[in-house]
Length: 312
Image (tube, rainbow, N blue to C red; front, side):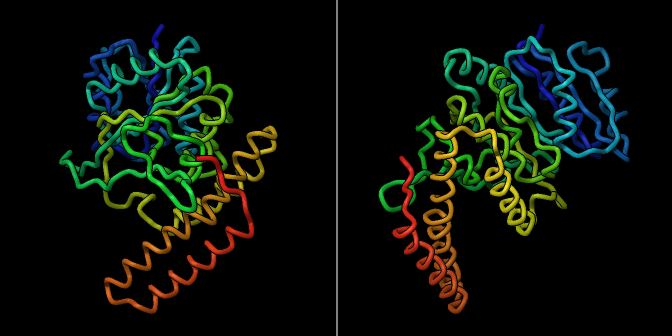
């Protein structure tokens, strides 16, 4: 039986999915299965998949009515081998580096306390050209402020994942024995932010580590849902509500959550506000800069009344 289950949700990605499939088949680590879930595509995605996996016994296609990316991930997981040790959910329009599986499997094998790893990545365009990719940030509290973890600090704590660290869902590989203890992909949440519901759960149940090596190529293309900042704001509010309503948390986990929310609200958001103020000021938008600065200062001041400094 395969040691790694690779589950790829697919929706209207006919121009790209063949490249994802080829990148899986080029892996230097070969003990895998690839389950592709066509989520009711209206183009010829399913036909492209069938042609691409013809003759490959480790890959198979599942079809379902359009139900959303989380439902597609869950459907693929339900069909995966229960004997697999690891599971990943790469997107259908992205590309894996050929050393992806070999690297992450070796890391998880060597570190049994780690329940999930996430690798470095770069953006590519529709023609596979590498794009300028912003630096990733995993923020943690320090003293009276904020610190970004360096790439050479592997541990990614709950507070970083909860505060929307740059850990896209497709770049993670999970230990199945930990995944089965989580709530799984939240089908009622919708797209964008679903990873901030699921991924921090791993940090409550195990260690989460970062592998500072580019092993994933994340495609950026016009019309992607996540490009709209308003979607991000709405999703963030939903994530906070989801975690506040997570009745399954025990007392210690709820304390970790409370500290993370305090840090997000009273330290990280003010810190970002000051940065936005500086950006607007440099652009000559002084009134907007003042509003950001005043709002950030007010919220930071409140932190000394509403105490609850998380542990670094």
